[in-house]
Every structure is written in C-alpha cells, then in structure tokens.
Image 1 (cartoon, rainbow, N blue to C red):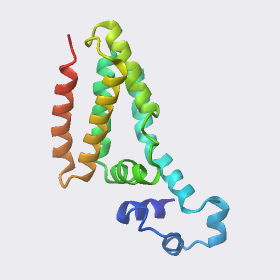
Image 2: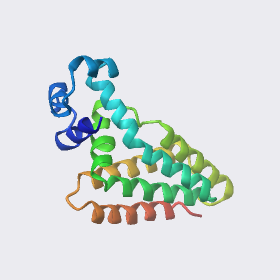
Image 3: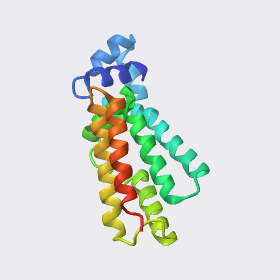
Image 4: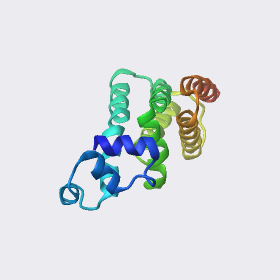
Length: 176
C-alpha cells in the first residue's frame, strides 16, 4: 500500500499500473490479487481509507471538543483546508478519488455533518433561517472547491489562508 500510495501521489491513479506497483514493491502478482481481488481499484480504495482517516479523526475531535454548531462548521472548514495542503491527502482524496470514485463525497458523512450542524445553528439562532438543503449544498460546494483549489496550488499554505478568509466571510454572512 505504501508503494501504491507513493505512485498514486506522484503520477495519479490512471497513470499507475499494477505492474509498476508490483515491480517497485517486489511483490508477486498472485500475492497482490490475493490481498486485492478487484485489482488496482480495491487497492486504491484501501489507500483512500488509509489517507482519509485523518479527516474523520479530525471531525471526531471537533465534535467532541467544540460545542457550538457554527464553530464546529468553521473548525471543520479549517481542518479540510489544512489537510488539503498535505500533498498525499490533496492528491489522493481531493483529486484522484473524485475521478476514480465519482459521487463518493456528494452526500457522504462530511456533508451530513455539515447539514446537521447548519440545522442546529438555525435552531439555536446562530445563523439566519434559510432553506437548509440549499445552504448546506452551497457551503459544502464552496468548501469542497476551495479544498481542490488548495490541493492544486503551487503555494498550498497561502491558498489555504486565502480560502479560509473567504469561507469564513461567507459563514459570517449567515449570522443574523
């Protein structure tokens, strides 16, 4: 998995062949297919799961330690933008997974957490009463696209800071 991860980050999923992975890992084809019966696709899913744990662990920490729903949203945006500056996370999760596993992130747990926190924020009066699904889709789309922008940037740290400023301004604009 380490070799596959390196190759997926260096050259992308499409440009990485099973033969390259096997050669660099000095692994037999039979052993590879024993562990990954669906081949490169199942290996990629395993790499995604490994890299994506940072995001889920970070969200768990935020939920456990930040009480205000709107502050959880802001902390979640900060986490996603910070992770987007990491070359492995950016390439594997934000760039390659979006192509290899289309739709996987559309209404996943991150979206559901955002939607739930927006609903709670509206109930508590932290943000204006707006159409929930439209608000969630808009903020999720902006945050996801901002993370892509950071991951593809030649200066990820600077891009993350700029995106953070813009996304925080959008969220602050929702306050009553």
